[in-house]
Length: 314
Image (cartoon, rainbow, N blue to C red):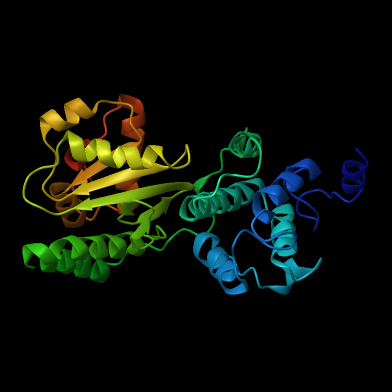
């Protein structure tokens, strides 16, 4: 079409200042449709100027207020469009995934019906095309968090002991706060607990490009199948790529895990996992990545760290 032909005239090779990703004009129009329906052209979902800046800083570590993104105008929509046109495919995917998560949360919170026909199918088709054949190395995922120093590990251990020493009624909220601090220490962009209509989410974090919802429990009995199914039900109500991490200090019953079954979108950790991870100084990111991989290979949601890392240091 005419617009695509015009765009192609200005598409320069990667690294020479032009468009360096695979987004086409039709893709950009889809992005416009997905983000403009709340407040109209030039706006992005329900973001204010401040929350738009905070979103990019938190989710992508990008200063979207940099003048280089405003060459076509200062509106949020024009800055977003310029950014996703001039970044690489992998960054475009991360941006679109983060926007889709915010969009889904907005629709749920507002009780709105998605006004865009086949929005999720069209969006997933775009993500699939952008990621096809893309297998970025770890170095291409953006800046990696620095190694966690021994003093930080010591503080995390002390914080966990402090939670254990609290009165039972105070431990639940304190445990959620402890986990947020743990995820932040390993650069996992943790979010505070939040409430959606009819449900409480104990927090979320990002591992690579995947978003995980968190369920955190600190109480006496091990977790059984009903709690696992309840959490998995929350995951199933979210976007198809959302995953979950269930952290239970008291562990999980064998019968509960067996009844929960295999092939779910939830991985599990218990208190012994936390202790071994901190005591043996195994990075949390490696623990989660290996749990995810083993779950993909076996379907099992819970495999202990001692079995995943029998010979650490590796």
